[in-house]
Length: 155
Image (cartoon, rainbow, N blue to C red; front, side, top):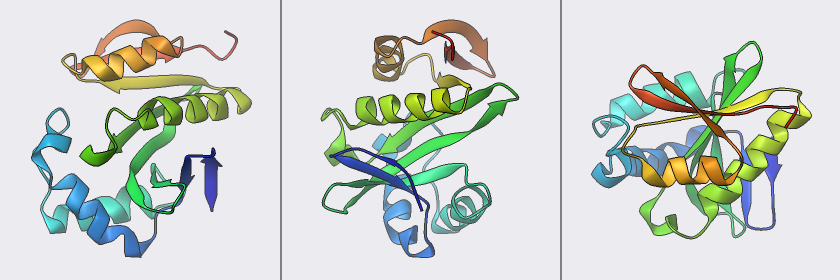
């Protein structure tokens, strides 16, 4: 199932066949710098089962227009009135506007659902904070060590 898409990126439900690409992503030290220690294959398998193949999914595969796995999008309930959104991308796709484009797609989806959108990121993640602010998210404070940015549905 396709969650949402644009001319350059498609966000779809994960498949069991995404395991190898997902493992390459989550075991990369540069990718995981602000998230967690790099994943083992077993941790990646659990993540795929518990976050990607669950119902409803917590994360969605991100593909380029050519169908290449470029990472994943975070999109799930944050609280009763909000959806958390985010992205984790392969380094080859950094600084090309994909995170920005995915933020726009997911924020629009949350808005259509009548929900606020929330982005959480490590305080050191300047690029993520910049993308959040560029899309109209306001800094709300810190929760569990992460900076929290919110885009109100009515804005």
